[in-house]
Length: 252
Image (cartoon, rainbow, N blue to C red):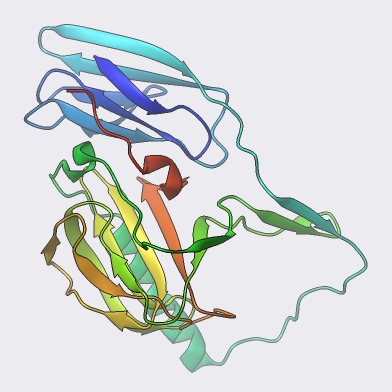
């Protein structure tokens, strides 16, 4: 088993082993190597200090223990503010939120039998300014809010957004409550990227896209204070820093 990647919180390992080998992470079976032996493993924002990757095939097994570096996150402690509003949403709004949540959960749970991740990733926006780092969090009066799991990339409305890697579109919605225009792409084995607040969507659910293909345009739709692309990435429920994938390639 050969591994390469960024062994840190929000990072990943790209591997090559026997075709069809079962892949375990910390003792849990998580995926299966492709027909060429390729596989990907993602590390959550809050991953522990060690990760044990094991490949099991009929001819034997291989194990590697990786040291996971702690992430450098922007954490803000805010005191003296009142609690959040407890006003309840209307039944219609609650139904909409629940329906959208189910759609998004299904999109992120995709497990396409592809290996587009092996060819590496490029930036989805050509010219941008990073306006929000992955993993940031606010703590109000000692109570932590959910971390920011995206990478915010400020750019003018209408700026082209390209697929950073090939894959299959698992969701393409124009008017979600929080995300506004949203696209999700499965790059193989459950490595799913997301593109939020889009002003235009150029792809359809189920469409196969190539690296560098136009998929949409930057906007400020949904819950956004200005035009930007929020780029997110998950792997089987683990939140990853998409920027770490840029330029990475699987072992030959």
